[in-house]
Image (cartoon, rainbow, N blue to C red; front, side):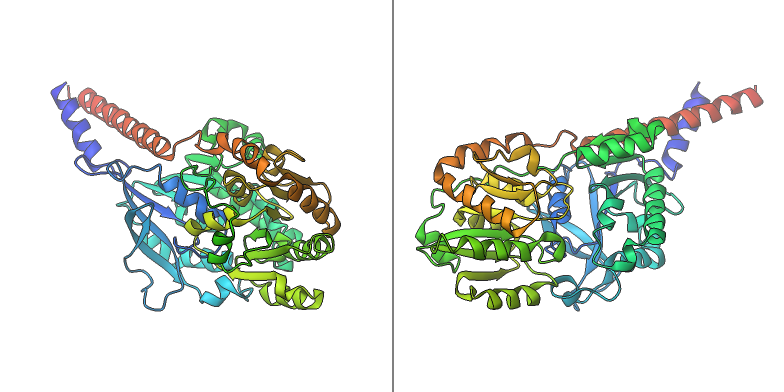
Length: 443
């Protein structure tokens, strides 16, 4: 038995896939983002929230993503501060800031990410990492071949999201077929797959029934300590501090300025609402390739003095904007979740939204907002009318609707610990078998 134990100890220590004694497991978190504020979207917000579930004392986390800063070297270690923790950050590639904020890139960001992972990512993610945590199908080259434990978060039904691509060629049958195959290859290589909404969880567990035990439903959450009603909500002082007209009611949009988000429809709905409510102003928070067209639309509708383009706002400053608003409007064609809906409600602000993502689960017509059955400016205008009538009395109902989204059902740190422990057990079992064989061959 002493011989067996010594062989097991040696094997566990030298096994490339195992965690060596005396150090924390090394986790690589990879996202097509700068892990700061670009590109705008719920994915980055979700990842920051998930990182808060990984205890720094238990894991060594290194972030991999993109950079737009000329002074930040690609392939070399920089840093990011998230949730008060400082993480090493290694950019895989550089993207012009204009491509992230104000224009549609000639080459899709997904294609750039795939290429960067293919030519540089596999070298940077060496065998010293115990687990790789991925957030997009275009990160597939990092697990070809598979050298690490892999956790993959699926941000909605990904092939359905591709149908809403800004690029027409991406919506063709051939490209969609290739994209679906990429998704399948990544999921097949993942040891655990986290789904942020029930739709994708049901679809993918049905598509891979033999792998159902490896899928987890892990809904995105909104932090109630960050997004909550303020005492100064909807006060003239708060609105003045944000550059809004202090004596006017506020209709708010938060998100990327893209056709998919329907901001052009919100503008027309707002214009219609001002005919009966001359005390309304519209605040548009965010940036994107549609900003120029939207500014032209504002001028054409004759509402320039009533519309404020606030630009990109740091996520932790959105609290004041949600609290300053009388109603928040979301008109997306498609959402996997729709974090802005949850954040606005958590701040006590009624929401008007299309029937996508989490909206049907949390919005109650005439109580904390309005659900729009048809994605038209007329329907949105009627929804705004309903929400404006609710006033401050809706605050409690708004906040109550988001309480179950204040925590996740699958803490990420536990998923990683479970996988690493399982790998160590498998390694020990293999080594024990080798030891037994060695004893049998050398009685």
